[in-house]
Image (cartoon, rainbow, N blue to C red; front, side, top):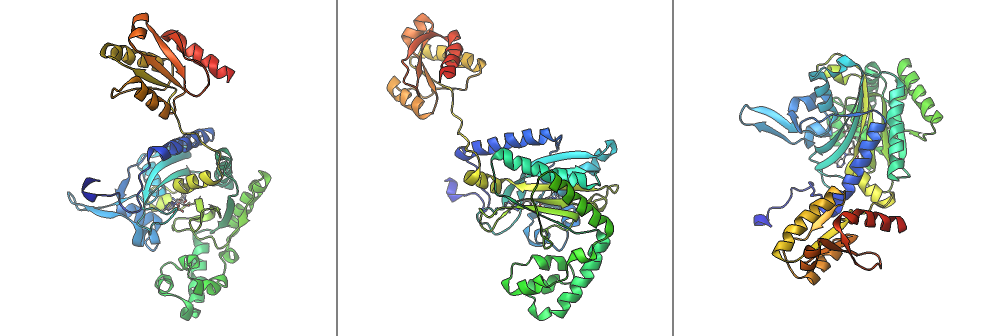
Amino acid sequence: MVNGIKAIRGMNDILPHESYFWSHFEMKMQQWLAAYGYRNIRTPIVEQTDLFIRSIGEVTDIVEKEMYTFVDHLNNDSLTLRPEGTASCVRAVIEHNLLYSGPQRLYYAGPMFRHERPQKGRYRQFHQVGVEALGFAGPDIDAELIIMCSRFWQSLGISGLRLEISTLGNAETRALYRTRLIKYFEQHREALDEDALRRMHSNPLRILDSKNPGMQAIIENAPKLIDDLDVESYDHFESLQGILREQGINFQINLRLVRGLDYYNRTVFEWVTDKLGAQSTVCAGGRYDGLIAQVGGKSAPACGFAMGVERLLALMQETGNPVKQPVPDIYVVHQGEQVANYAWKCAELLRDEGFDVVLHCGGGNFKAQMKKADASGASYAVIIGDEELKTEEVTLKPLREPVKQASVKLIDISEIIRKEHLKS
Ligand code: HAM
């Protein structure tokens, strides 16, 4: 180890024996998003700190204590490593006037940063796939987002996820509800912990999300937002449920669903598992009709979600379809200086034929090289020695089947291998 330097706590290396699993996930993810007409947007990992304060909300865990914020000493700007992707996506959409050409279906994937206490399924650098539909007002797009998630779980072979949905109403509903909540919590001051007392006036809805067992009874009896819901939000929520039922998507209404970010209105939802311990939410999102205007754009409705890739991969390992580690098709074994030149050419020709080929490097006798070929997991060894150089043939040795090795012309290899595969 370099002078004892290690990776930062809560930030993980993804090693080759894990990264193939990530690649598999990413390939599935891209196919899935293309099938629904979502296009990729890539934004910088660092943004002006103000963007996140303005969008996620000043009195949230993320902004209050979890952001990696630093000063750019060249111009004294306050910058922050993105803790989530919605704010950046909205910023980019406004900056490039993307909504000018109509509503947008977008997605992004990449690392996010939150200074949380690391534990299984909770990291300081973690990865999200985020999907945002901007410029759509109706409940049909909320339903599309939820239905497409369900389809993705199927394609990954994940089962047993629970969908929870709720509605937060419009801005007036929430203002009204806020006042009622403050009044209620004022009456139960003695039962509130320090955190709740601090938030009572700035963000009382967050108190509902408290995990403090001593406060659960007070939270349970608190007024419910649904009682103040405006008619349009009620209809929106009803229509969404109608589409979900019609499309065979099971859900539970959880009126206590509180999201950790302040930009939501109307629909909110979470996909939850009971297989990952405390970090049970694998995907979450909702509608954020006010955010675009809040960040400085022309007012437009929007809705989206993000999934936690580490949590989904953990779940796939528990319940998903098995994924095979990739192995080369052919390992080229060779000996002698002149032979090496020929071996280089052979390897490239085989790659031209579409095979994944590892060319042995580092010398050694045939026996040692064959051990490496075997350990590589390759299906075949192509063996090249002085004899092969003379005859311009190679020896093809199947490594996984009880089939004898044979001298073959290089140009015949792909046909032979394809035939072998057809037989097996
Ligand atoms: P979020 O609920 O903060 O929402 O994060 C979405 C998902 O990211 C979580 O459900 C979880 O799976 C994963 N996640 C969050 N924090 C961590 C962590 N520390 N370690 C591992 N995984 C984590 C958002 O970020 C919103 N931007 C979602 C959204 C998009 N809403 C509308 N559009």
